[in-house]
Structures are given as C-alpha cells and as structure tokens.
Length: 299
Length: 284
Image 1 (tube, each protein chain N blue to C red):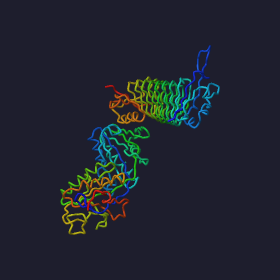
Image 2: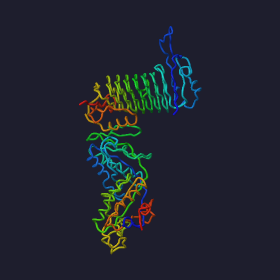
Image 3: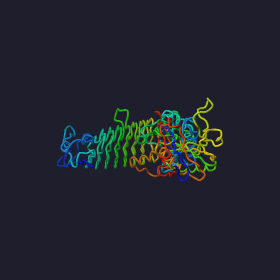
Image 4: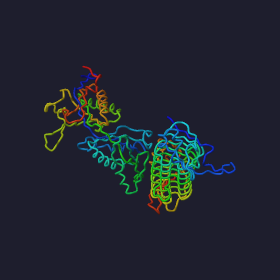
C-alpha cells in the first residue's frame, strides 16, 4: 500500500506500557525556562542506558502557567512507578532546582501521584515552607538564588513508550528532510514526546549482539552501508534510514503522532516508511501502520 | 435548584421588651439550622427544629417564616446578631444570611459555604477544618482562632472578610487561609502555627506575636515587634500562585499592586520557633 506514492510497509510498531508524568517548568524568562527544560530532559533518550525517557512537549506562555511566568511542558517516562520517582528526584534536584529562577509544578491531573517535591524539600535544611492551595501542596525551598518553588507531588498515569516510524530514503539529505518534517508535524500532538536528539534516531538498535557483553547492537538490517554483508531489509537504492521514536501518555496520542509523522515524511526521495518491532511478542501494544492510515492509502 | 428560605419574624421569643419597646435580645443558639440536617426533613419537621434561647427551648417556627422547600441551600433573612453558632460544625451545603450574624458563626465548620451580607460577631470560623466563609461586612474578634484552652485554631478552609476584622484574628491558626480586605485589630496571627493570612488594609500592633510558622501578607506597613528580623526585599514567586488561587478558586480580587512587587520579609517570632514570616508590600 502507498501514501502519495511512497510505500507504507504492512507492519507494526511494537510499543510498551510505561508510566508517564508531565512537569511544568517555569522561570523568570523564556531563556531560563528553556535551559531548565532542556537540561532536565537531556540524556533521556532510552530507558536502557539513561534510566528514563523524556522530552519537551510544548512551550507555554505566561498566561498558561500557574505562576504567570513563561514555561515548558515536559513529559517523563519509565517502566515502573518507583523508578519514575527516583529518576525525577534526581533530575528535578540536579537540573531544575539548580537552574536560575526556575520552578516546577505538576502538569498531570491524575489520582495516582508520586512524591517529588516532598523529598526535595529536605534540601531546605529545615527552612523550607509548605503552602497548601486548593489541595495542592507547594514547597518553598530557600536557595542561594532566592527561593525554589516545587509542587509536592506529580500525577502519573500509564502511557506508552516505543511507538516509532522508520523512514527509508535514497540519501542522507532526503532522509533528514523527511524526518524533520515528520517531527515538526508530530509535535502538534498533545501528550507525546520524541525523546531522541531533535526527535530523530540516527542509530536505531536491534536486540542482541555478537558480543556476549552487549544486549543490543546496531540495527544491521537497516544499515545501508552494509547492505551486501547482512540480511538486509533495505532495497538496493536505499542510502539512509532514520527512525522517530514516540512516547506518549495514551495509545491514541502515539497513534495520532505516528499517522501525522508518516504523512509529513512522505516526500520525494523517500523510498518507504516502515516501523520497528520484535515480532509482536515483547510489547504491550502493536500499532499497525495500515490501520492508523486507514482511508489514506492507495494500492 | 430548590432553596429553603427562612425569614426572621418581627416578633420572636428572643426579644426583650419594656413598655412595648425592644431593649435587648436574648442570644439564640442556632447550630441546628444546618443544611445536612434540614435537607432530609419536610417543611413541617423543619418548623419543629429546636432552638435554645436563654434558658428556654423554642421551635424554629417560633422565630422564622419558612418558605421554599427542604434543601442544602438555606437563605436566612433578618438581623441575626443575637444568633450564635449558625453553621457551626456544618459539613455540606450553603447558608446565606441577609443581615448581621452573631458569635461563633461557622465555628468548627468542616465543609460547605457560609455567606453573610452583613457583619458578624466574634469567633467566626473558630477551629474550622474546611469550607469557605465569605463575610461582606465586618467581623469581630478571634476570626479562625482557637477556643480558650485549645491548642489549634483554624485547620484548613478559607475565610474571606470584605470589611474589617477585630483582634486576635488567626490566633493559633494551624492551616488554611484568611483574607481581610479591610483593616484588622491587634495581635493578628498571634501564636500562629501555620497557614496564610492576607490583610489588604492595615494592621494594628503586635502582628505575629508568638508565631511559630505561617505567613502573614500585608499591603501596608506594620509596626514590627523587636523579636522579628528583617531578611530581604523581594517578590516571592509563590504569591503569584497564591493570588491566582484566591481569584480562581474563591473569586477574591487581589489588589493589582500586590502582584509583581517587592515585599519585605521579616521572620520570627524569635521568642518561639522563629520560622513564621511577615511579608510587607513595599510601595516603591
């Protein structure tokens, strides 16, 4: 099946249940809100090596934030609730509390919560002050820059990690152009992030390696420079492959993002668009490309 | 939605008369006029509710004309300045009083809403643990305070007074918020344990005396006790959240000058824990 002349492979993205949360970070100006946002979501591409997956969901105007300052909405995902709390404690403590003028608040209205601010408050060495407004507790922690304000707990909910699309193109330039357009389109979807650099994965992996000390290695069937050396999934004219991984707070949001991404990536020079999976036995959700594009495809 | 409307009779058992002239009123204990109690009764049963006045026991219908239908929403018309404990320990629904109201109104309130379109007496919301009280006139002494001998005053909930308040407001307050648009008397938040008090008008002497923790925010200069220390002049970010919360959740308009301006931060009382704070808006 094709979308605007580009082959859409009849396959699926294999995604996994994760726990997600949304944090709103604000600062005195956009520059420092962005610094805090980028630092806290940095080095959070893959759960395997980073312990957490995270990204910037969107920018928020002063009118949209709790304290009337510019901010960013951030999403964080891990496999377990405990690890989400542990990782957030580290990230908020080391990258948001340390960012000049920054503050952070819960952005997810959920009954299930994890305590983050209630742990970080101890940094205040007994001089921290609690404020309770409409059942939301905030901690004011005295710091060298003034006061760090953080909400006591953050809502969490089950989400989905590992939604993905893979763009196979004739060359590097065309693959990047298509992937960039896809990322731009997918950013419009609320409740998702693309945790890799710029939203794009240049070095997707496969499970297993020839080396016993490694669990994963380069995705050889999709590496264009070794096409002739391995059992490839690539057509002869393929010159570059880029992947976009999506984590979301709901299956629907991930599906919507994949759909918009595929449509936006269907550019001249793209040979086919596919998705990564492990045969369907490992993940909790299989997202079929032909299903999400139902009605948009042609023979 | 149905409402129950009670109108105070011109002639009622609490009036003390001499030569056909009213010379005083006997206090009436009105804690039985409570939404959770009245909503499940019929009009006839509501009329039979017991009200104590002095050493006598009367019925609600002896004092009030009863209209409308049984409801969690109660409207009371008349000068109730001799009615005590109205809304005391209320846990649901709303009471609106069109007139003045006496002492102990909504004391030990747990939840719900009390609005008074008039003035109220002492001990308003004393030891309340939840709910919202709005007074469109003035309030007496001991708003949100602890009763004599008790260790904790108001512990959650919100009291909003559009006029002035008396002495000992927020005495031993533990949690919650008190907002006074006008002025308040002496010993504001004395022995305060925690919570927030906002005074948009002026405060008389001995603000925060003996306070342990908690926050007092005032938009006018305060004569500080010598047991408080000045720390800094700054804008605390949490005030944006606090003010927005007051507006959004309770419809309380904070004066625009209170936003984004510097406040002097004093901490004390150093005769106690010393972790209370007084934030004084700087008109610069």
